Length: 506
Image (tube, rainbow, N blue to C red):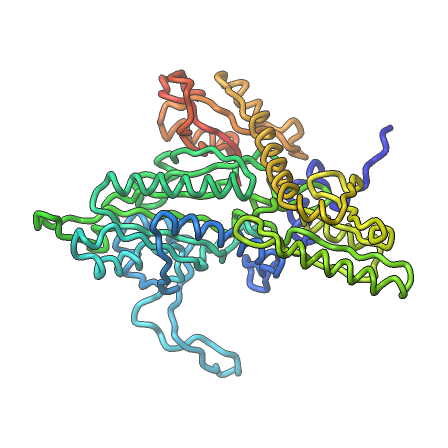
């Protein structure tokens, strides 16, 4: 019987993937559950990761002409009622404020008082209230295009929550634009989807599929919804960003009108697009292993952990001086849009320090002891390699090559995720094979199985719903890259114009 390998995380991914995910978040010190049901507290190590994602994405937005603004947390109920599909789509998720103060009741407890003249909705998304501002700011074709984004929090009541993936309150960005023509708005919708894809692939090291949502999966009130879909290590899909062409629906509801060059009056064409802290959940599930978190260097909370080692008190001053000098040299190196971030861990906890940083996912761990100082060298481990696999370089060489090493880790994580996606994306044409692909071999213990099934779909909601009800599998998107041509629907056998991506999803 083979010897069982000891891991820092129990259970392992193969044993219980959902619980493994929760344990990675716990041991890496990213976040924890809040006293408020369904909400989370993002801890400093996790928030640093989010800040790095925000910084990179914000720069990409601004490079396309977008500017940041801020709009109220509260939305009058009447605003949501203006767009019927929109209010219907979010009605069950809305948090409602009905009173404006608290009073002490007869039993001494605080009770709501002061009924508001109109209920306020804690924003689930901001199309309606931003539309109200657009209706006042946009008067002429010269005011267009209007390209805005806000970084904020939103609230959508969730019955079953999971940290980062689905919480009642979460952080995100929502972009909103208004245009003079449908063509401009459609172009902007695709442009922002490409920004999300670049963020996922170039920074989070997660390969994605770009595509279009089916009518039943569109954003409420949208004419068209585009998305990027990523494959996690359990073969499930994660929607990592969406971009919506809203047509003139919200412009009509909010009276966003402008005078054209020939002085006629028209409704604007609008878009909205968003991504959230769900990206962190995707990063965890795409890269981490049974020893904890693995962070791609380009968004990592920090890059290098220096671990000074001494055996006697007399050795400590020299080791710490060497460590401080190395930290200063590394911090002077530019990596992407920031300098190399360095942590110095001088706790007297022996080998446990190294495992702490492995579990926290830092890309590089560097051990520095008297022998390293004598050789003017460093001894380091990489998070993308087994924990016991370490290398030695001279101090000068390590500083000179730090950017190359970090980029190598980044690329290796992307390549590993891409291989997983390719190996588990299957063309399936027979219904029997399709059902077998998505059915666990052991129903009592569903192991990691399935993946992305590229199969034909006739376009009917009946077939879409049948697969959802039978297998809990949804059409993730109609991919832009599909080149296989027409075929027969996997459900009913009727003609199908193209293959779509079927998968179980978060």
